[in-house]
View (tube, rainbow, N blue to C red):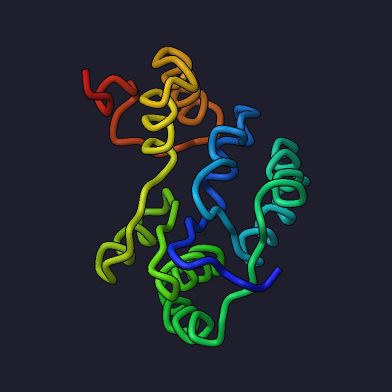
Length: 168
């Protein structure tokens, strides 16, 4: 696929990996104008051998989440971002920047770059909160997912309990 929708929501590798790890990619598959980029697809493909659950993410890319090619403008942005970011983060940020979209990433450097460039962003925890607030999962389930990410996948979170992020 080539055409990137305006205001696209662009997924990065870590978020796809996290939701694949708990086998619940459907919690993110319905985000508005959701896409990802070839560099993310490549990172997932390369990781399947050691992290079998990434097959869930790759299946979602085949069935539900379009993989879009960056425009010429996004490619230029990507080249400058590659000086400080990995390919998946650079390409996802470049596409989001080019279409005034939102990037979904947990990578600290990518988040700092998005903030610096004025790109809207969220991450895995923000999507868990959204899923609870939309009554798609319970707070207990979301908390279980967060703990699994931390304990099983080495996810770095500012808190171990999701309650910190939920409005009570």
